[in-house]
Length: 113
Length: 116
Image (tube, rainbow over all chains, first blue to last red; front, side):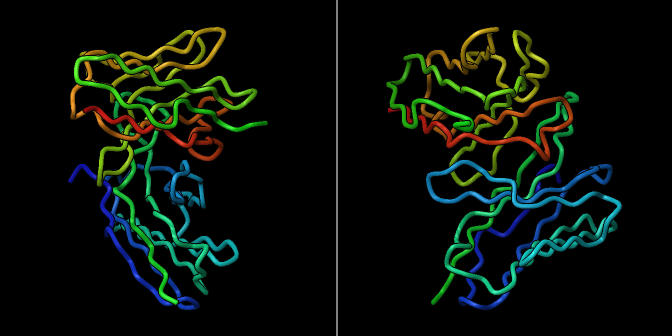
């Protein structure tokens, strides 16, 4: 398909790990990204991974990349209420040579107490 | 540094009116990107501008939409004769140099356009 695909919702208990999955479209993408959008706010770059890596860890965040399946995941360890947000997966925009991004629809992460 | 500033935050327009959305990039950033987020959708690239130049507008509808980034002042996204389908959140991002969009870009809070 032409779109970056993500599940729309994920509900986890506080303290558990959250795993948000994404499938992207362009196997030649050099970087892949995770953005976080809190209510009423703009997008914030959370982390990114270079395409020659399989895994990147940054404190509570772990990004896994499976290039063969074009699958990207974001794991948040010890999920906290402050992690409630929409998480967008993104890859470089493939049209027209721009430096922009193509985003998925976003995964709403819901934290249960 | 106040970050990327978009105004207005909310804009209501009647069908057929014009909408003008403004984006002031971060200080020192000369590259601006506009994205549109339709309800229940991800952000879609619209246009990429540098000062006084449109670099790529391949994501922008051919009619009624235009964008500019003058030498002085904010970038403007202009939508003429708005229709209900234009109702969306419009986000602006800025970056300091080419190729840095993806790791050094900052997004504004967006302008939510509602067409009634």
